[in-house]
Amino acid sequence: METELVKHVQKFLLELGAGFAFVGRQYKLAVSDQDFYLDLLFYHLKMRCFVVIDLKRGDFKPEYAGKMNFYCSALDDLLKHPTDKPTIGLILCQTKNKVMAEYALRDMSKPIGISEFELTRSLPTNLRSSLPTIEEIENELKHNLN
Image (tube, rainbow, N blue to C red; front, top):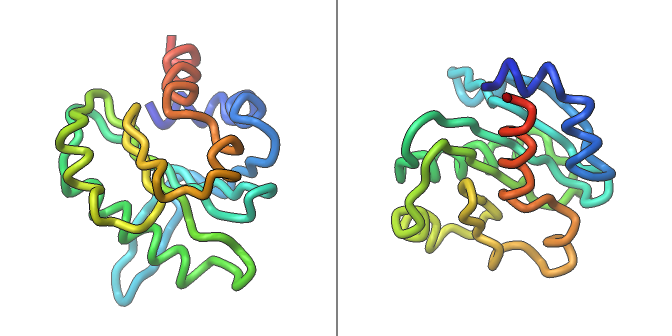
């Protein structure tokens, strides 16, 4: 899935909307003495923030939310410029469970979305319209993978 998405990254970025810049695939993030690899990392020029996408096969698992929270925190400490907004995380799963997603994200303060379930209460109203919806991203992925 990731390889196919990267093949179409230019078209994908154009369809995501103005302002997305591709930073990297399997972007290496060194924390302490360990290396972590982010599936896809973008920077949104208009919103002035990083957007990290974690691609998952199969069902959503609650631990994915903790991992994304970790990625967002690390990016904010290690890469974010002081004038940047907080990193946004998107977890794209093949299948989702809204109840588990709600419980996994309920008390997290970071803007994280899971598949079609978005935790939009964390995003300021003026930023919500700048990001594509999860449905738009899923439709683009399905279209490009067929």
